[in-house]
Length: 468
Image (cartoon, rainbow, N blue to C red; front, side, top):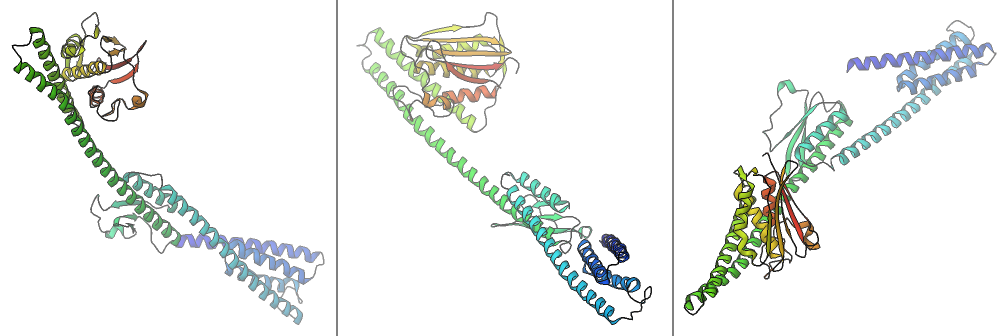
């Protein structure tokens, strides 16, 4: 600090000396041209004003004034080349010069300091605006802390660390850190932490202190905003989970009622009229009961899978599975639902094994086939095809139904999405099947999509990597 002040004084002295020299040479020149002492004094007065402005110091103006009087007395007053003044007019002239130079220098110095203070305040205001706007787009506690530390470094030149109250205990400054200054990060909820600035003293630079205090205040606002956002997200997740649970219970209770009613009616009819019914009628009732039980089994399996997905407990048990066996098991599981529909299955000519959780992939194919059955009329055609393409096992289920309604195209793989807003009675389904398919395929690092089927209907395609 002292060295900087000394360097600044030396520089100002050189400036004042240079201006005084120029004034002296100019005065000698115009005196040679026969110009009077009054004009020469104006030249020195101008030099005094320049010294005050360029050195930003009133003291250097006074020094220049005294030096100018002595030089004028020595060179331009009678008797010349002495410091004696014999003419009273010269005395009055030099006294007025000294007063004029002093007053002008004082006014110029004050005006210059006022201008410098205004410019400094403008710079500080601009920096405070940049700090305030710089925290607006930032989210995340780490990003806020990083931005605050970078602002301190950028606008004050000092290194700093940020300690947050909820991350670690705030330590007291040690003797080795006496040159550090601590600025509290305050919000409406209390103290959130502090900024420790190294190599800085509050009395050193008031502008820098204002900037650091502003950074601490903006960090407090940003961190409080982050806390509110986190709490809001937790509440939102809790509300969505509660809504999901309520929707699941409502959907399950509704869909269980229909097959249970059908099972009860068919069983009661079979029990009470067993000997009055023909073999074909008893066979038909037994088939209905088997179909309803299969549907219930699929429903329970989907609900269990969805519960595991929601709890992040969907663990894959990958093994090398022959795709023919997987598709055969799925077809056997669903074939009673097909009734009069025509199911065409196309498999690769060679035997292909793919790493997968066979039970879950069977569930995916069953869900897709069941979805095709629900949305196609009797005697419609459904095709199931598997092939190898570009390192993937590609499985597709195509139907000849009416296609995907535009209202649900973009939400088809979300939970509880059905053609109607709730549960359909004519086409049973709680909207979990496709969501489960996507979750299972994604867990296998594959993908699933839906596209129009030619000439009509829809085509669901999923891919699994051949190397897991």
